[in-house]
Image (tube, rainbow over all chains, first blue to last red; front, side, top):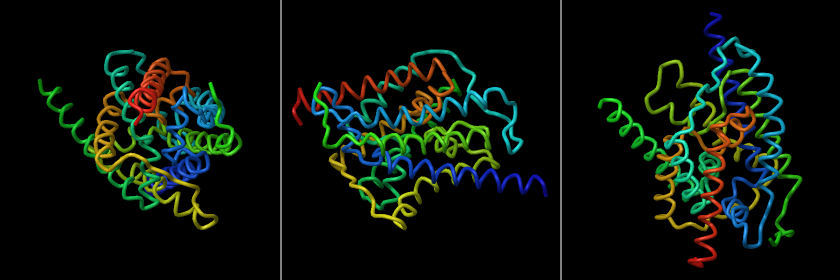
Length: 148
Length: 144
């Protein structure tokens, strides 16, 4: 029974986090790809807003993660699953660079993509479906790599 | 550098960012995990049974956020200039590359920097640099 209730709370906090995250993206202007591109346009008429979005998020995040790093379990009694890898390799850098190109061409990154989907935007739906296909392609490539 | 003062929205940007930070804080403190969207979604492709529900719930939260917003006020302007074909190509690119690089703007940019991860600093530098460069090329060299 306890385990069952635990699962419900895990799902509940995931849902609440997702909703707050999405509302934050909308309020911040991150859900508007045109605004994102105006932030990335350093040499044009630059809109610095998104630097403050990162600032606001990291300001709160620093406190939360400093606290979280000292704990072994979450408030719901789950194991803290923070990444431990410190390896800076080709995958990390190349993945980041290619993602940046896709982001710079569309103005959309994964979280706002789902918010756009929720607004019913056809363009948002196209982006999300393509992104999910891309993730499946990654899984297929990875399974071949691991099989080698 | 010319600042677009007419479209600069410092207060909503900070407040929206704070909400994103609060969401990431709740998620790590209660669920013990990084609120990295591509990691959460990516985990659904080869899922473990107990993993599915919370992953779907987080994504569902993102999707219903604009509907909840609309209960209280109209959505702010959303403008997507990219064509359907460009969106299909960039969507594919973003899907593969964020999984390959183990993170995106949320996982590396927000959570990773917040936990002072050297990997996430490098990844964030890489995608910010590529993003700035891409917009420079498309807007100021190709003049698209």
